[in-house]
Image (cartoon, rainbow, N blue to C red; front, side):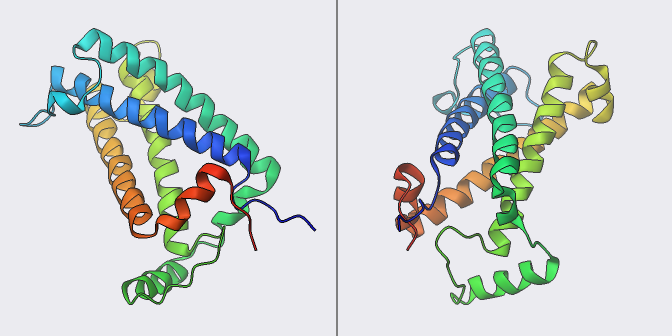
Length: 197
């Protein structure tokens, strides 16, 4: 009997496209932010993408469409394949149990399964992505897409909502990469598929 891959090819492809789109959007977004900072700092030019405002906006909008299309494909594939079930159950009790187990280094790891803390982080970053899309569309076209702008509290507030949602995604990426570095054996299956025992 053939073993199933730990991560099927549609998930690996969507993950890779998502990573590319998010990196490009963060870098170009930081360049856009630098043109009109919300706070008393700017991002170093060496970690921004676009070099000037017009190019940064062009990169940002191009990869926004990739991110949205990729997100829609992920939702459809997840519903069709049953992958969404991997995010359940998700209760405060389970999250707290797994969080305590992780702190004491006693968290069990099942190949291809998510613990409750991982489920919470993945659901949280998906929601942050939705907020980014809604606030970003509101900022991009505040007159034509006024309902997105209004949903965020107006144009000025939408910029803050967008910034903080982006910060959640960046924090998620930092934790995600730190965990991959701490447990490098999880990376090859996300690239090559791997085989479940």
